Image (cartoon, rainbow, N blue to C red):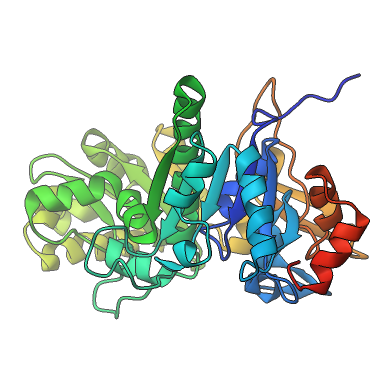
Length: 403
């Protein structure tokens, strides 16, 4: 039986990318069958090979963000290596880089230069702050995206210092948006023969991640309510919030304005809320004090029983409710495990099984097939051989430290 091909089978990608936002797009493409060549510096490679949790020489960071790609080492300070890169670009559909602004041009792989080699090339450029703002030339990290893009306030707790979160949401969002933008440009290139430069940034991606909440904040021209998501208007308010149960275990619920009072009835909270004069959720828009009074009373009431009890009541009333998982609990949740969002695999370089992200897609005809991250320079001879370099040529490239 012929193995089903991934949706991106036949797509050729060359990436001079490091870290997370610069590599996630191409790992996702590799999951879907694209042929992805990752360019790394000789004698060390991508610094993220040593990031995250290490099991032997296998890095949780590098494995997650570079699985399924091929590793080719090139010292782009040499003319020989630049020639190889240009040969690869001539055959490629997509090229990606996330170097500090200006560095790609200095090393011979800026967009204008590569466009001359391959006019149909889709060129992805990931930056920290975006291409046109006052800080465009500065390097950026996930913390910059969260801080500038509004994420930090969105997940802040009133009365406590604002902090960036432990998960790299700006990086990951940027990677996913780059993935989508590049594939849109690829469709255009295949229809017209004309490639283009696709620019994304950590700040722009984090800002987009804020979605309608950011739009509402801009329309109102004042800070959002934090500590819980109380949205809508003074006359018609809904809520999404987390509360601890009697054992200190958190649950989440979300309901719109029409479900607010029925939810209080179902939970048995209505009398207590009436007595405290807190049945009008819209009061949360009037002041921080009134918002806190509502949330504090709800917290007091939810702390009288278990979260299983409350979730059963809410779900029976067709109201959205769920336990709040820790990250470790999330990796074991049956909804995540049984849908294949996490997988246990036998890694070829380890004596133990490890857990990895599965695939976020379930495609009926073109399945996703996650692979493993490559060793540094693992595919040098294969890739150079495909370009026509023989053993003597490859030996010479090693002598001049081009690979």
